[in-house]
Image (cartoon, rainbow, N blue to C red; front, side, top):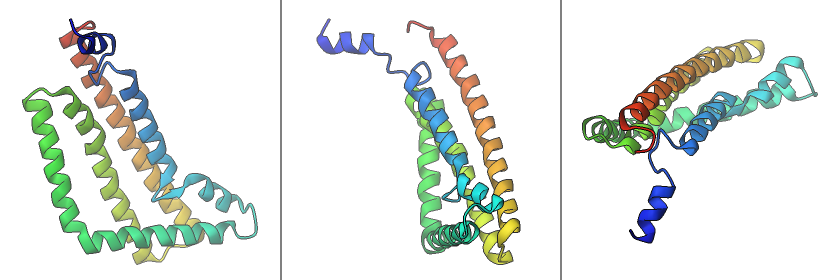
Length: 175
């Protein structure tokens, strides 16, 4: 047995039985639900409470900048990004679920729901721009968006946990 074999035996490199994968999954969804359209949620809370003279103005400016950025990227290269995302997701799905590559399954379980969150964010950004939302109406729209992101996150974590447990039971705890 070589040194490399000993290292691979000592460190479990399978995704669903690796603690680091589950930490990355939790951190990913925590971060995505905190940064709503690229705006930290605590800014919305401060703006709603009226903490500081310019809290609402700063919040509205941040939302305006980030929605403008998101819509600009979607308008300029949305078709190309959609094609690349479709290729990447379908490649991961085929490698993971047809050929049984566990790492590809894990990355797909992270990336697929995040793609849905990206589409939700794009829809929300368009509504904010089209309806010219400001003040409490803007906070309410972002609050609904945040709730939908959290629902997607909970469903994603549940499905990933079920699939991960199935994989761990099917392969066995010790490999």
